[in-house]
Length: 268
Length: 340
Image (cartoon, rainbow over all chains, first blue to last red):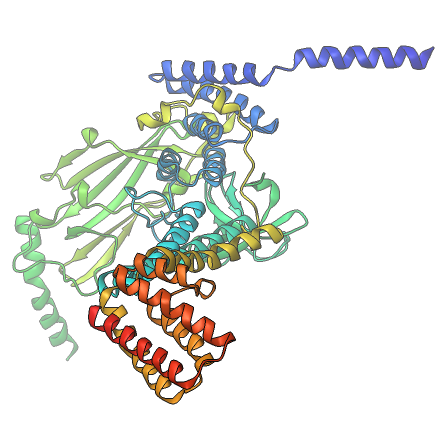
């Protein structure tokens, strides 16, 4: 009897809990409402930031439930950014860019967030902007692979035309296409290699002010000689994990160890 | 000796001291030398001291502290302290504070040899314990070297707010970029996309097969399409014709047997007219040559020759008839050559 009563109570509790949890659509509506409230209160920064923080919280809940897309991460990043939560904003920007590397608004937002971080003038700690011109389409893997295959096929067809017609112009065009195919292929391989490296070394963002950077994975190790203290929003790449410590590579080739709870790590 | 030295040294320094005290400016060239100029040089020449005061001494995170920097001293008018040139703060100050100059509240009293510059500092976090020591690097023309005047570090107590991070930014204006305020809406926000693969993008047997196919297929397709649909240019055909025709004529001179004529003719048609191997029949040969632009009469002759040669393979001919066929082949080739 007790077991039966207990199981019924459990079923009721689960049912009640299920009703209490908001659906994904409701969470989205909550986030959008809070965001619009923040926009309306733009002249009063304190109130606006609280509203943006609430929006970020709702979008974060969607992420926790497994929703993954560039639009969500862009909204999340903007909400965190406007709430003044720069480390979380940077993390969301990076997550969004992983899914949509060509998204110009995400890139612009990322640079705007970095503009708000006070990097020291004497150390090159700000990550470099990609040198790719903004007016060109972003070189994504499928685009490069497609360009390489099309140019390769065109090179053969033009070569065959030149062979049959014995005309130099077709042969030259064929060589040009072969060159294009080679360049696209090399760029595709470089892109793949870069992406592999980035996936093996996710972004790490310092979440607090005045975080000590150690030379080893323990508090007894001495601080880093040139970069003993880190500031909030500093970005680096995870090199290794050992227990509760993470080895991070920061721009300027500074390598050191941090406690895991002091950083945000870009993960799935 | 010592009295004489004192007197000469005193006389040498006297003009400089007199020049300073009389007019407040220095005589002669007072331009600071570029050699050895420190990076934080504030473009100030003369002799100056620096002091700083801050109010209030206790603030919350993100709240404003008014910092007044007072510079006292004398120097030539062209090189007196000016805000755009001042390099007073150490680089580390931006780590702990949001810094905003307040030029509207500056005070300049050159007659009294006092200049005041006002800044607003907002601590970024509760670990801040002081406003760091400021420095003024100026060039002293009397000693002909760069000097540094320091202010004292000012103790500051920063209260921790209940919610630290948002409070740190309460008074800071929101970012101005309009794109940050544009939200993506609709069902696209709830999509579930998979992250890109974490390995080489070609997976499994099928992936490698497709990649190899992508490499091998284009040349095959190009060659087949070209051979079927693109005839050789006239120049290339003529060159091939002459070469192959010469070889055939030479072979005909050597070869006396009638049954060997068919393979020779087939080889000639294959090399010069790209006749596929399975089409060496009278009808197919005539049709093929017609498609290649050969006249109807010559195509008919070719068909006749193919028939004769094929028949000669299976029914041996007397030498006279064989030599007749040879002559026919020779004249046929010569006609084709001249026509092309």
